[in-house]
Length: 335
Image 1: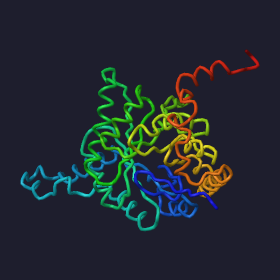
Image 2 (image 1 turned 90 degrees about the vertical axis):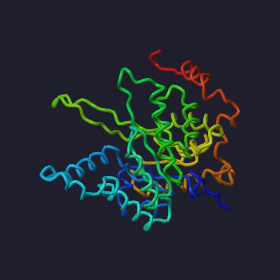
Image 3 (image 1 turned 180 degrees about the vertical axis):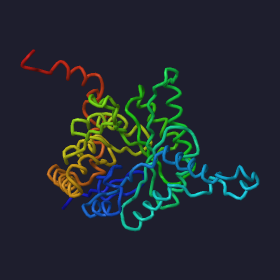
């Protein structure tokens, strides 16, 4: 008898725990269908950025006002901006077409960082057919006057704003850089987040020596990176009232299994798909099922969180004890 691979994430029943994270792989209907054919359980569409919405809205606004200075009364003939269609229409069309073409949940991603009207697009994402929304909050606190309390409040307020607009679940993709991650996770859940996606993987800038320019530098993840999400998912499992998704570093069935044992409700993959293509989904799913059968697990739901901090024999392994053991036990031929 084969293991039951179904898992619940954001209240949605997934046929297995492997989800396609936002990436170029989820940007077209053709590639989305290839992912579904390979066995993907849900898809997260590439992000719609706050800056895109603001730029397009401003450009449209300027175009509409062009020439009205010749006749001030003419401005009254133009529609209000909130009722005017901007470039978001292309994204809304992708959601609608994906819902028609796929049988798995479709989750658009909304990326921003400031309070403002861009959060209102969440309702249009829901109306287009989205099964849930992933709110990707990307904010780098570079100001000397920025305090941690202010930054945390901004996150909480943004989550509360989007959650109050829609009736579908909202997952929040967060940074790992909070000094009190557990407390922040609880506050985000309290503000309306149905799920937490751990963690946002920031793109770091690089310097081009010959050109003397600053350039973005994107490096695909490796399996070594999954331990950050593994630790915090294990710590948060059973302690916050929210689904937990792992992202960043899952490349093999073994990687996915570790995250599920820690307590992840789903494992999001992007880099491994970009390296190996949609067919890699089938390899991940079959590898998970094979291991579960060998170790006599009946279902993913039974397995999830069985090695979380609350359930494992050594809870301190996720905290300072693990840190000390790692440093004192390391050996090298040069030491």
